[in-house]
Image (tube, rainbow over the protein chains, first blue to last red):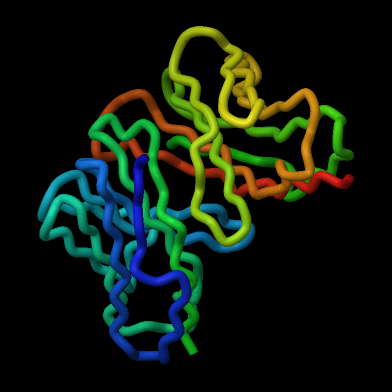
Length: 112
Length: 116
C-alpha cells in the first residue's frame, strides 16, 4: 500500500521561528510536492521537486524554501514564520509522468 | 494558462438521491482531468482520472465522471448518495505536455453534504 507520511499532524509555532515540515514517501517516486490548503482557495503549489537536489518554485514560494537530499524525503522550511503562514500543509508524490499524486495526511500549522 | 473552476462551494443532497459536483476547466490541448476527495482531517485521496478514451470514467466508491469537451466540463456523479460520501471534493487539471511548467492545478473545492 502506497504511503506518504508527514512528521506532524498539528504544529504550533511563534512568529519568527524557523519551522521544518518533513515528508517521507515509500513509493520510490521521483516527484514530490508541497501545497498549502486554505478555505475557498483550494490547494496552491508552494514548491516541487522532480529529483534529488532538484527543486522548482510553484505558485506561492515566497517565505518558503525546500530541501531534498534523499529521494524519499522532501522538507519544507519556513525561514521566519509569520501569522499569514497559518494553514494546512499537504505533501504529495508522483511518478515522473506527474499523473496521479498521492497525498500525506497534512500538517495543520498555527503561527501565533 | 490552465485553470479549473468549481462553481459550487457546497452541494447538499439527500441520501439515496443522485449527486453531481460540477467542474469546468480551461487548458490548451487535450486535458488530463482528476477528481480527489478529502475526508475530515485527512489528506486528499485519488478518485478517478480522464486522460483519453471513453468520456465516462468510473472510479472509486461508485463515483463516475463525464468528460465533455464541447462544454469543457468534467462533472463528478454518483447514482445514489451515501452519508459517508460527505467530504470535500477537488477537481484538478493538467495540460498534456510534460514539462516543468505543466503542473496540476486544483479547483477551490466543493463540500458535499449528504443528509440521512
